[in-house]
Each structure stands twice: as C-alpha cells, then as structure tokens.
Length: 441
Image (cartoon, one colour):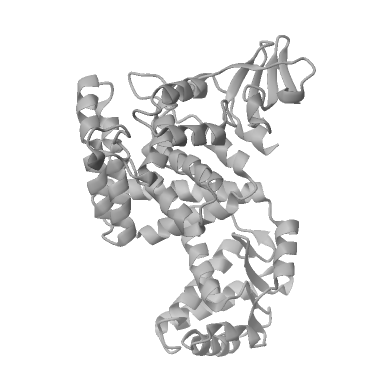
C-alpha cells in the first residue's frame, strides 16, 4: 500500500498542475496516471480522503506529521482548500483515469469562475466537501491532539526560520508570506495551549543556534501579544518582527570566544540585521521588519527622541534579551531564567520600557514553564504551569522529579501545598531536566 504521504503529494501535484495547464498537457497526464496508481494501491479498496481541519491535515483519518518536504505539500492543499472554501476532497476507490480527467475539468471550470466555492455542489466518485461549523468542532474535539498540533506548528516555524537564516547568510530573497502563514498557524495552534508554548522556549540552546534564539523570541512575543489582545494581523506583524529582529547574529559562531571581536560586532549587529532583513524582500512587511530589526537595539531613555524604539521594537526587545541571556554566549555561560529576569528588571526604564518589562514578567512568570527549579525543601522540580494568582509568583504548579531519596514523580500546586514549599531558584540550562516528556504527560 502506498503511504499516506505519497497519496497526498500526488493529489497536491495534480490539483496544482490543473490550475495552470490544459488537460492535454503531458505533465498533467503523467500526474493523473500516478494519482490513479496511488488510489488503486489503497488497502481494501478504501476511498482516499484528504481533510484539512483546525490547522491539521488528515489522509484517510490519519494525521499527517509535518517534516522536510511535507510542509510545502500541506501548504499547497491548504491554500487550495481555502480558495474553494472546502475542507475535504475524496476519491472513490473505483475512480478511473477517465473519472479523474472529468473531475479535473469540473475543477478547472470552478477554479476560474467568480464563485469557486460552488465546486462543493458537484457530486460524483470524486468530490470536494465543505463541513459545517458543528462538524468541524466535533472533528477537532474528537481527533486532534491540540498539544501535538502546537508541537508541529512550532517545529515548522523553527524549520522555516532556519531556511530564512540560511537565505540571509547568502543574501538571497525569501518569500516572507510563507513565514507569515507559519506564524498564523502557530498563533492558532497555541490558543488554549499557551503554557506548553511557553515551555517549548525553555529547551536549552546549548549550541547557540540562531534560528533557535529567533523562534524562542517569537514565541515569547506571541504570548505577550495575546495578553494585549492584539488582532490577527497585528499579532502576526509583531511576531514576524520578533522572528527577524536579530538576523545577523550568525556571524558570532565564527568568532568563538574572541571578546573584543564580539564586542565590535555587537555594535554593528542592528545595521547588519536591518540590511539582511531588507534583502529578504522589498515588500511592505519586509521593510517594516527591517526597521524593527534596527530599533530593537535602541534604548528607551535615549536623549534624542528620534533614536528611541517604536512600540513593536519595545515589545520585542525584552524577550529577545531574555532569550540571549538564557543561552550560552561564549565565554559567558547561560543564566538561569530567574537571574535573567532580575537583570531585565534592573534595566527597566533605561534600556527597556517599564510597562513591557511588567507585561513580560506577568506573561512568563517569575519561573517560566519548563524551567527546572530547586524547592525550599531541596527537591528538584519542573514548572508545569504558572500560579493562578500573580501574588503567588514563587509558588507555581510543579512536577517534582528528584527528592532526597532519589527520583520522584509528583505534581504539586505550591500555592495550595500544605507543606508551604516555595521555589528557591531556577537552574541554568546545563543543570536542567528535559521538560518535554513532563509537559506532554
């Protein structure tokens, strides 16, 4: 039996080709033959159904995990479905090549019409289908693991960000709209799973990978934007600025621990980042992101008002600095999250906007989700969730993983803990426990 991925790729290739080629085109004819082979190879002659719902792709009821080469195929089908205003396309197991060509003829007619969504009214052995809201909600509740959906969206954005960094290194353009769609997907997937998104940013970046730093900054900025109740477009604009703010720091990896060279480069980073972002694309979004890349480095108390950062740059600057502090910067080791927050607090009102610092701390908490902490009892624990009452900042929900007698496995809400335990300190990344299995348990 052909894999779900192969079937999905065949469908995407044929429908994309049918948008621009006549049915007599050899490329399209070859694609139809391959699609027919994929349908005929299905086990038990079952129909082929591709479903896109709540930010996830399913083939014959099975969730398709994103990975290298898969994201592009999913994006192709998603864009096609959005234009047609449908959720599903299904191919009956008895479909012949003649049926496929007849279907593509109908598809082309509707695709080029002012009302492409009318294609959902065409009935046959191959058809598109639009789901009602109740059906979409039922599918989302019954088949989609929202935490896994968030992980896929985060991984996809990280993968795309690495591609952006590689393009910047070569001064090549990049389609920023692709990045914006991935940001929107992460924003949608993180609704209701904010604690897990915060926890994903706590994975140690021990290698100092730039795309890791950029995605961490973007995720933390997204959480802040959520607190501000920004609209969809404004939120994507803000997160994009965070994702592209430091697009020159890859040069640091070549300098190693040369403090003098690193100091000199730091002064040039804002201008270099701005130029690198601008080189990706000269559309409005790219130029705005380039301006923000420069402004993030400016201090809020600069004597010259013209050299003070704008609102977007002020929001990005705090999580960006937090991300850098909690990652190693040779010869300096990484700071623990609570130490980084103390350093940010000391710079509030001078380097950073005081209100933004307060917003950031209220967003991530004194001890961010995913951090390894030492309790007043001496036990080691991982923060699973911030306290419901901000006044209980040192008493979040934790999972205790190690006690005086060895390994432990106990979830405790310290704000209601009879033993009145509190968090004494967070541990640096090299001392941390891998939080992923604990956050997903």
